[in-house]
Structures are given as C-alpha cells and as structure tokens.
Length: 390
Ligand SMILES: Cc1cc2nc3c(=O)[nH]c(=O)nc-3n(C[C@H](O)[C@H](O)[C@H](O)COP(=O)(O)OP(=O)(O)OC[C@H]3O[C@@H](n4cnc5c(N)ncnc54)[C@H](O)[C@@H]3O)c2cc1C
Image (cartoon, rainbow, N blue to C red):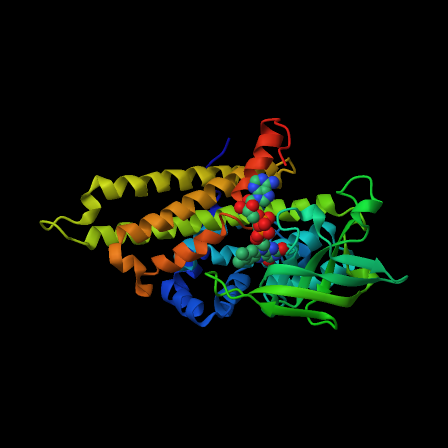
C-alpha cells in the first residue's frame, strides 16, 4: 500500500492549488451573486491540463487517472470555489469525457474530446425525470427508431449547466419496460446538440449552486442521428453506471475540498474573534471539538475516495467505495459548513464571510447526484447482502 504522492502528482496538486487561490472566495461570491458560469476559472483549469487529466493523450489529455482527478478537484475546491466547482468536472470530464472515451465511437472521440479538454465545448447530462426521480430505470423519455435514427420525446428535470453546454448526454428508453425481460434492458445513451429543433429548456429558481443553471428540459420529437449513439443500443445500463460511479468520485473529492475550505474559514475566524476576557473563541473546546470531528470525517471520506479512484484506475470494481466516500463526504461537508456558520455567530450569516454560500451549496450533495438513502440502500444490498427493501 502506497500513500505518498508521486512528484508528478505533487506538481499537479500544486498547480490546482495555485489556480484555486487565484480564483478565490471573492471571485466565487461575485459569480454566485450574478448567477454566472465561472468561465475564466474553468478556462484556466483546462489550460493547465486539469480537465483532461484522465482522458486519452492522443486527444489532448494526460492519460493519468481518477486518483489525479480527485486530487486536483480537492485542491481547486479548497481554494475558494467550494463544491460547485466539482460539478463542472462532472459535466465535462465525466458526462462528456468518461462517456465518450470509454463508450464513444472513434469519430466522436476525434471530434469532441479535444474541444472538451481545451474548454471550448461544454457538456451536460439529462437523466433525472419529474416522475421517476431516483428510480433511473423508470425513465420514460423515449427514443423511437425512424429507420435511420431516432425521434426523442420526453421531459427531464434539474439538468445542470444546460445554457452553458453545447452537448447533452441523454438517457432514454429505446424499448418500453413492458417489452423487456429485465428493466435494465432497453436503455440507450445519446450525445445530442443542446441547440436542436424540438429541444427546449427553462431554468429553475433554486437555493444555491448559483453559478450553474439547473433546468427543465423538454424533448419534442428531437431528431437523433445514428452516429449520436454512445455505447450499446438497448444495453447502455452498465455504461450509464460507469458514468454515475465516476461521478461519485468527483462529488466526494469536491466535498472534501469544500469541507477543508469551510474548516479553514471557521478556524481563521475563531483565532481572531474575542468575546469574553480577551480569549479567542477558538480556544473553547466547545467550538474546537465539532470542527475537529468534521476534519476527522473529511479525512476518512478522502481516504475512501482515493481508494475508490485507485480501484477504478486498476480496472477493479469500485462502486461500493465510491458510494461510501460520497455518502460520508457529503455528510461531513454539510456538517463542516454548518459548524463554520455556527463558529462565526451572526457573521456567518453575512455574505462577506463566504460560509453561507458554502453552506447553501453543500446541501445539494446530501441528495444529489445520488441521495444518502439510495446509497444506504446500495450498501445494505451489495455490501451487507440484505434484501431489497423497496
Ligand atoms: C441542483 C441540482 C442539480 C442536479 N443536476 C442534475 C443533472 O445535471 N442531471 C441529472 O440527471 N439530474 C440532476 N439532478 C437531479 C438529482 O440527481 C436528483 O434530485 C436526485 O437523484 C434525487 O432524485 P429526486 O430529486 O427525484 O428525489 P426522489 O427520488 O423523489 O426522492 C425523494 C426522497 O425520497 C428518498 N427515497 C426515494 N426512494 C427511496 C428508497 N427506495 N428508499 C429510501 N429512500 C428513498 C430519497 O432519498 C429522497 O430523500 C440535480 C438536482 C439538483 C437539485
């Protein structure tokens, strides 16, 4: 077992740390207030090669792995962004990068990966639907074959980054549930243009993660060409799981980085703030213990996440580890942001202290991209061998 980082990994983390600090807390507060995509920072990340860290060299990536991607995300999010930045990694190197590099055609790789890695082409993924929610096998968005391609009809909800994306990974049924033996059959992935006749979207007013729009998406007889299929027609369920499991690693890395940031803000504030007899509030164990507890939990989530990433990079099963890391990481981040607010007292409520943004954004990761309950269902069934309870 080797826990030390290589020189190459150290250098990459240092690059990520530098970019994270360059686009720090004030940059993110400003973009959050204006609800604008952090374009300059994402471009800097792409220019430094961090978007393509795990993507193939022949298309402009560095061909490293999920371990390196997780390390980069931790350092970038800890600089001032918080967890929302990890979502941009989900959109691009995961929904775009993993889907195309592992399951796309050679033409798709050649046409899309260089632009993805360079930051010129943006991606999003449309899985969740209003009626099926966590039950991904029940999606009803349907792609009907028209002889030479498909016609896509249906509706998605909460799709991140649509107005800033050019390409959308769409999860659809190409066979109805009644037509297949097992519900995992009859699913297909498509990579379609966001700007296409019949595809419309509408943003949702929401609590946080304001730099990335979340949208309702409507498909009204959207034409899909045969070369826009990713992976196996009618058999894309395992391929979708691969995309979703790598997404968990990215989410957990974002939680670790954002949690680290929240704790730093709290510790710095507590070292300065004096209320009784000239002692800083940070000297009280009542404030120290909860922060120390959060630190311990974040470190455990980090270790589990790096294990998941390492297993992925070795080509070994990593679903349990990725889910566990996401569960504990999101819980520890929610606790850390809550404790950062509490440590700051009234000032935690002030936008200028930044903790409130991290607290708002952190709430998302308790239920997305997968909820705590669905992870616990997974652990109960797959790790403990208990019967499916739903
Ligand atoms: C800001 C934001 C961004 C998002 N981005 C995207 C995106 O880019 N693409 C995309 O496809 N989706 C996206 N989502 C959707 C997100 O993945 C879902 O919200 C999430 O998976 C939960 O689904 P749901 O909201 O339908 O909740 P539901 O499935 O309705 O669940 C409601 C509650 O019931 C619980 N529950 C449901 N079933 C069970 C069960 N069997 N056992 C125990 N408890 C259960 C859940 O855990 C949850 O607490 C986003 C959501 C948000 C809010």
